[in-house]
Image (tube, rainbow, N blue to C red):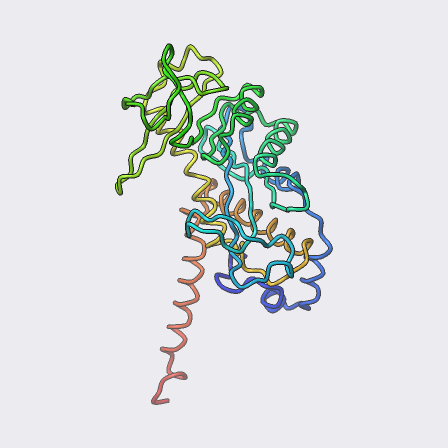
Amino acid sequence: MLSEPKYTGCCRLAEILEISRHSTNRFLLREQYEPIDLFREVQGNLNLIGGVLSGDDTVIEKHYSQVGKAHLINYYWSGKHQKAIKGINLITLYYTDYDGKSMPINYRLYDPLDNKTKNDYLREMIVEVIKWGVKPSTITTECWYSSKENLRFFRDKELNFQVGIAKNRQVKVEGGKYQRVEELEIPNNGLIVIIKKFGKVKIFKRTFKHGSCRYYATFLYDESKLMDWKRDDFRELQTIHWGIECYHRALKQLCGLSKFQVRTKKAIVTHIFCSLRAFCQLELMRIKATIESWYSLQRELSLKVAREFILEQLSPTNSLTA
């Protein structure tokens, strides 16, 4: 998956490895990887105490697949396209330790037959990773995962959090009346408010170049520290959370996430697990300074192939006047 930029199907893999394409297809159907298998692969490369958990989802685009004929494929909202598109919804817990190393440690593929929401999956994954020995200090999510049920869940797990909140979220300054968060004057270093049916948080406002605004709520389990939580602290967590967006992009561009032509659930799940495992290998290579960045590997591979091709074509035997 890392070495083939365009074709990552069974036939191409069989051609490269010089094996039967049926062998690769049987591999996809035979293996039964679970999220804990991914965690076991990566746990030795991360400091599992005191890091930041980021939760988010992305749509694995399958524009030309038919809903109902391929398992897990349905219509899901895409922030990129600003509409519902065909694909598979991947929900990930992405962990960043304080050395800057970051990898996915748990994931789910949305399946309507599970009768669960994305919020159910998120809480389920957090319970699992804590059971596996992860002890994060903070969780970051976007607006979709900021329901009061989730916020209370984070607090019950003694987690600090920084989450996106909707502009119409009901909040109040202590002693005041509840109002929409967009109606408040929020200073640069944030404003301590009470979220309706939850409790005390510090809210921050981000204004983007095109004029739109987003609002974020920061909760610290030790509320006495909220006063000292400044803009720089907010930005640091925002930068860490941006890592999960970069991870989504790298999965799709470098790890062949959507480049499968199988239809059964088992084969699809195995392919996606292999893509996640490929990303972890990229991150491990970056950590060990084998590559400069995630994108270096394919660039170096294509550079080597292009160089060899040009030199071969320049040889006298391939000359037009030979």
